[in-house]
Length: 377
Ligand SMILES: Cc1cc2nc3c(=O)[nH]c(=O)nc-3n(C[C@H](O)[C@H](O)[C@H](O)COP(=O)(O)OP(=O)(O)OC[C@H]3O[C@@H](n4cnc5c(N)ncnc54)[C@H](O)[C@@H]3O)c2cc1C
Ligand code: SF4
Ligand code: SF4
Ligand code: SF4
Image (tube, rainbow, N blue to C red; front, top):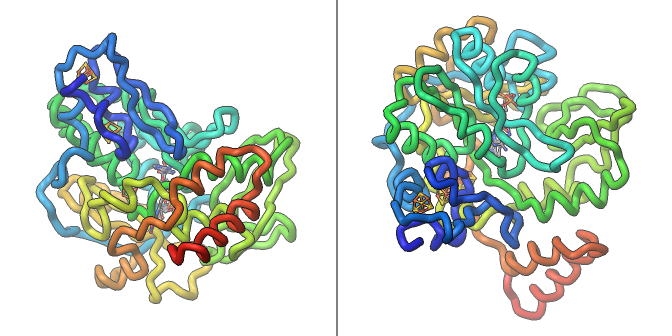
């Protein structure tokens, strides 16, 4: 296993090594911190080294020459229902719909309530694409969907920048680059499944969930529209049509406290993220346009950037999207420019989250005490 990915401890968890391995020797499993990592079966591994060739974590450079965006806009779908059900302006959804119409299959992310995980899926119809609407702020399980990407068909793949960087290497290796259109997003980081599982246990325990929305533009308690700038609310819809919306904005909202305050992201997001601002191996990058130019827009605005001719062509082909011209730096105001700092007691916090019976409040009291005693933050 010397030439395999077995020696890597905290990688991107993108799963591309698993689809690269002809021996099917790699399984993606959650580690002690709650992130996907490859586990190599020594009995199956022939030490061919193929898995390392498509691994973006092992390379400090991107899979492509670094380049600046060639076209960009701020915009939103002209369909109000699409904007209401997507995370920002629904342009990612409109791009995926356009790709379907143009003969692509779309590989995007849904949340599986039974498995309690985000996972990539292959969409061949608009009905399937509906499931990928909205951000799922979790690391996605990629292997089953990525393994279906084959030569001879057209594919649009949406993923975190690190997933896309590895997948582009794989696609290049198999000479499929012309068949694939890549879309990534400005990426804050992915939070731990240990935190997510405790969040579900504390707030949605016993609920027979039909779906979970990570961003919500409707206050379910009053049925009124919720402003986009305050849409960081997790809502669980049960099978009888009810909902559970345990917390609103601010620090009583544990999920977003941990996620947005960078307390339990993957180690890779603190140590080896090479994808901030304009660094991308994708054709298109999307995001929330948090720019001050849109501070009064409470429905949702997407930031959309094309790095390649293929990406720019796709942006131009979009018809039912309202597009606004804006300076690039203004469009990208508010995006993370550098990696966040790993918090003190990072590993301890994530391990404590695995302990049943301990609530978030207990864990934070203990970490607070340790912080006081040691002076570490
Ligand atoms: C983990 C994560 C971190 C993000 N961080 C930022 C950020 O720092 N700044 C910013 O501007 N935007 C960030 N985004 C993107 C943002 O949340 C919206 O997805 C983006 O604004 C597009 O929204 P939309 O309304 O156009 O379409 P939507 O329909 O909301 O688009 C969602 C798209 O994202 C894909 N997707 C959903 N969950 C995942 C996942 N877990 N992994 C991979 N792909 C997924 C879906 O397949 C779909 O194509 C992040 C998204 C994720 C998943
Ligand atoms: S970064 Fe991706 S390809 Fe590299 S070892 Fe991790 S899961 Fe495998
Ligand atoms: S058989 Fe080759 S591709 Fe598979 S794990 Fe071993 S080195 Fe990697
Ligand atoms: S922050 Fe960087 S390393 Fe972390 S998931 Fe996003 S792209 Fe990957």
